[in-house]
Amino acid sequence: MSVIRNRKRKGQSDENLPIELTRKTQLIQLQNLKYDPSIFVTMKSGTIVDEFFSNKHGVPRACNFILIGDPGVGKTTVALDIVCDMKAEGAKALFISAEMNEIDLYEYMERFPKFGTIDILLLADYSDENPKLVIENVLAEGYDIVLGDSFAEIIGEVQESCNMSSRASEKWLIDLMCEHNKGNNDAKKYTTFLMIQQMTKGGKFVGSNKLKHNTTGMMEIRFDGTSEMAPRYLEFSKNRRGNIGKKLYFSLEKANNVNYHEEQWHSEEENRNRMENELDALQKEAEEFDALLNAADVVESEETDAIMASVSLSEDEN
Image 1: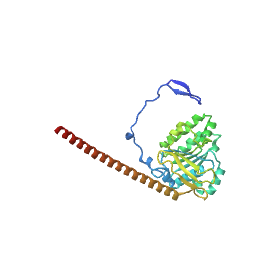
Image 2: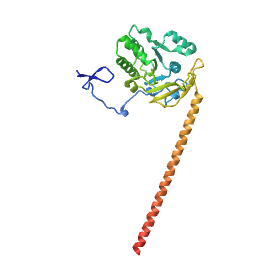
Image 3: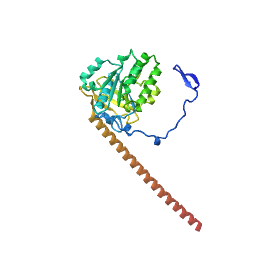
Image 4: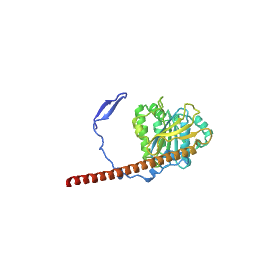
């Protein structure tokens, strides 16, 4: 039995922490790891979102993405649009909703009919039972992509119904996500989770270090201005599988699909590539110029040495 001591961190409750290791520490070398090659094959949506999401042009498997954004910007709509497009391309998809009921979602479907094709777990329907077991049971079937709305509300339902602490319920959900990342489900699918998350009043991400460490990417959906009439865009502020800081603009005016501004994306990509090429050319020119200066310095130094040697020889003869 391991010996336990209590430690209290500032702003946290007492924790039971072992003072002895409960398992042997193991070091790894990446070259010795073996993975199913399919884990590195991205899932497609068939839209410009694939290019936006990763360097391999698709949504990576076995990853956890957090989605945050401004109020009313369309987080749920965009996330559902992406997941439903992935389902249309062959991915097995699930939507866990802890914030809306079936009537609210049905009204969504009237404007975006494809939202009616995805499997949905309405967590509020199981608040009097055990939502923890419900989620575990549903996920055990195995899904390629799971959308959660929202991470905070899901753990809140579990916390309240199962009489768990906030810390314990968050740990449970993160551990569950990581297990399904590894394909520990009936279908052996390397599940990717896209979790909508709440923000602080200052617009910052809400979550523990454990959640941050297990997050592959942080996708933000913002208004490009202070008005709700301002243009909207997607942008990764963290992305281990792709680029950060590139904005994909979109609009929600038309029904059926989110309208991603693909031409603008490609135009900005061309401009970025052109600028990178110009910078590379300038860098090359600078290096060549430095090489010429260095060569000239060498020649000048050799000539100086020859002159000094000649003068010294003359003096010796005299």
